Length: 396
Image (tube, rainbow, N blue to C red):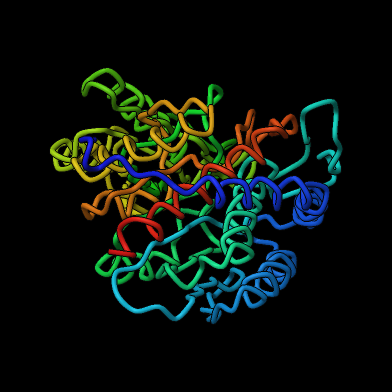
């Protein structure tokens, strides 16, 4: 960032944000509790809709117009705008969690400086940061100086299979994108992510009474076992690439030769140039059966693109680091190995940052939690970053 590019926010505005967030601190913790205490796994449509209703009320109170996009098998996707024309600042996240059963998960609790509960860091805490930043801007009279679009989808934890068509059209009219997945353990923000492809591998064998076998059989499970070993054997072939068979099942009964079997495969990789070779490897593994008579079928079930670092994101990182330094916060960059919907913007060349939510730990586990002080630090950071676009770029 050059001296000319150094952007400041008037101290009076920073003081307003601080006063607002300190005054409403307990209210934002209550909002977090309400969101976390609603069971809203991706497949829990009723719960996701309840989360949507709470968020929609807050967005409408900001004067935003909210559109719901229905999705088969999932809750609605929310897209809200404040009516300002031109290139948009997109604030993004998701309303679902990964969980399928809440009965073994803890209810929302606070233990010292940590808020514990399913979805605290992934990503109800991020949604609270987003709301707190926008409400601070509104209270300071700055919302009308920004063209803002909020997008919250309900199927992110299921590879965004129904919301994916929303992202590319949005990216074409986006100035920058800010996503609110949890921050890194030292307050890192995300500047790039790996790509991910997911496959379903189906195997057909020949059913037979196992007790009548004399010698040969065509077992779908035996064939699938060979394929699993072959897929896992690809680990190490491409730098920074991970192959994982995460789930497999098959067969009908213990005394029957399995007639069918299925495996689910996820593959993460950094280099977009590797995609073609990875797909060819998968196709070759499945093309020729190891067990005579078996038949393999490979289906691509989901995809998120690689988000490489780019110049625009680099500038945005410098900008938020300048803001963080003024707020006496420390922000470093992270190249995150997992995927998220921020990649649809970053892969399109849009300056993008992710990980703007509070610092979180152990998401997707019963120990999921966030560091509560970072909830307010990130709210302050986001509000002040957005204010730089009001006070400098858009006022000249």
